[in-house]
Image (cartoon, rainbow, N blue to C red):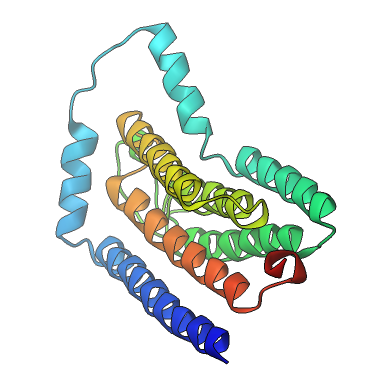
Length: 221
C-alpha cells in the first residue's frame, strides 16, 4: 500500500513537470508562429560572425552535431535496449525504447510539417515555407534518446545513486554540446533548439514516470 501511494505521488509529480515542460514548448511555438521577441534573438545570433577554426575542428564539430541525429541515436538506443531485454529476459526495455522513439518522432514530425520553418543557413526565417527546422530534432533526439538510454542502464542494471547522477550529468553535457554546436554551425535557430529541448524533456519525464509507475518483475528483483 505504501509503495503504491509513493508511486502515485511520483506519477503526479512527474505529470506536473512534464506538463510544465510541454507548456514551455507551446510558448516557444507561439513565439515562432507570431514572430515574437525570441525570434529577434534568433536573428541576432544567426547574423553573428563565426570564427574559422579550420578543417580539423570543423570535422570534430560535425561529429558532435551528429550525436543528435535521429538515425544514429535511435539505432544505438534500440541496440542497447535489445541487449538489456535479452540480459534480463524482459521486453520492457525494448518496448520503452520503441515507445519513446515513436512518441518523439510523431510529435516532432507533425510539428515540423505544420510549421514548415526554414533553416538559418538560408539567411531567411519563414514559416509555412516547406522547411523542417522547428522544433529541432537534434535537441529533442539528444535529450530524449540519450536520456532514455541512460535510464535503461541505470534502472535495469541496478546502478547506485552515484552512477545515476553521473549518467544524468553525462546526458546533460552531451545535449548541451549538441545544441551549442548546432547553434554555432547555424544548423538551427535558438528557438528551434529550445522547442526541441522542451518537448524532449517533457516526453523523457513522462516515459520514465510511466515505467516507474508500472514496475516489471526485473525491476522488482
